Image (cartoon, rainbow, N blue to C red; front, side, top):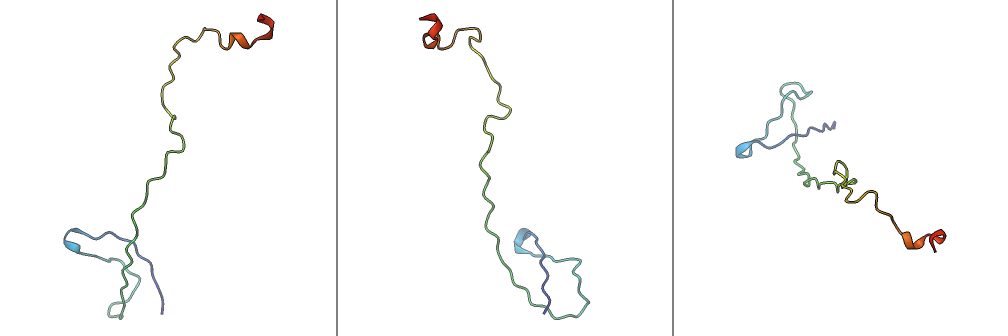
Amino acid sequence: MQAYRYATIVNQGGKLVLEHLPLQAGVDVEVIILVQPPKQAMPNRYPLHNVPITYLDPTAPVAENDWEALQ
């Protein structure tokens, strides 16, 4: 027995249409329907991509008390 995989979507009214199958007319076939689980959305790996950066006070000193030279 040969097996062919053909993925399609069920139309309105529950109709399933298979076209352009690699078979001769009159060949006996058995159809098994496997329902695929819904695909889950992948979590966003880069949530800050394309998010604008805003600097509130870019020239303000940072960690001034941690510098030994200023002690």
